[in-house]
Image 1 (cartoon, one colour):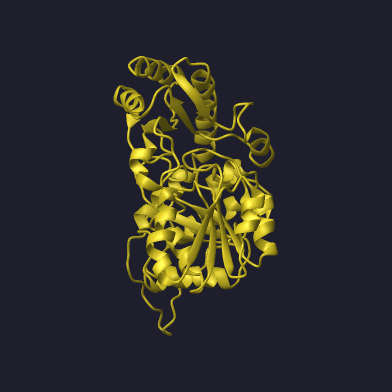
Image 2 (tube, helix red, strand yellow):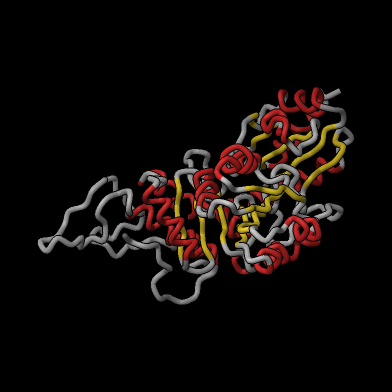
Amino acid sequence: MPRATRLPERPVMRIETVAVKAGMDPGGTSRAIALPITLSTTFERGEDGSYPGGFDYSRGGNPNRCALEAALAALEGGPEAVAFPSGMAATFSVIFSLSPGGHVVAADDAYYGTGVLLRDQFAERGIEASFVDMTDLGAVRSAMRPNTRLVWMETPSNPLIRISDIEALAGIAREGGAISCCDNTWATPLLQRPLDLGVDIVMHSTTKYLGGHSDVTGGAVIVREPGETLEALRSIQKDGGLVPSPFDAWLTRRGLESLAARMTAHCANAMELARFLDAHPRVERVHYPGLEDDPGHVLAGRQMSGFGGMLAFDVMGGRHEAFAVAANVRVIARATSLGGTHSLIEHRASVEGPTTRAPENLLRMSVGLEHVDDLKEDLDRALATAR
């Protein structure tokens, strides 16, 4: 089956250019600049029985999926990427690739769906998990076992936006004979390059910033080097039918073209909004690594090129006051997910349930591309109701 490849031999390009150009091949018969959508589920054989176009059946490969995988590999700096129909499918595939009897060390404040998979799905299949504070390297070392096969990190974390030392965690995994995986959804390869810091696998929910417009669901895994893990993921993708549709792959690839510009604006808006909230009398605490007094500020400055578009803040009071703020925004949408052009706000504790790490007065916000003054005015008005 076709494999995602790096760009053809060209001058070295900066990542903003890679986001626009990677996976695009205007050299076809149409010379189209915009990548066409190939919806066909099957492809014709040549007279000798081969497949001269490189594709046989859409579950095994599709031009749009290959273009997306090539682009994602180029952006993260890995040899290949494997695209999936959702971020959860990507996470599932990484864990499923482990042998039964294995052990996973995972972040205790990672995306709650990751914990659900490990606790509710894989525990019954012979894979154990320990959930630890990934900012405490000693705790991570203590959690390692002889049968640990995977260290799963997420930085910035969801929803507390804590920063973990990627290079150190990758080293701990390597010393213990385990592979390391970093969920890079929030930072994107524009702000953070886990493979360059020694991580073995990078995972994305491409639904978020990479797609960028809240109109497509997808996931991806990028590996640092070819080998058993890559082949296992390819097998799970093909044999399990965990493939994105051509249109979803096309939408995600199109979203990448504006990624650099969008992330610049997301980061700028989030930084200004974090400072505004940090000074607000109705806000107890702001969780954002761009603030100088944030516990992760120095580390984030070292391993990230920007502080991201996600923030969280603790409203003065409790659950009632937080709900009141979320109920009274007008410009910001009260909705789940993140990474799109629209600013979104939600009460994470009520979404995540009893295993949540989120305080009852915490609201998580995906800062969008609206004018930041409109966002500040909207929050100021809503905060005034939380009394």
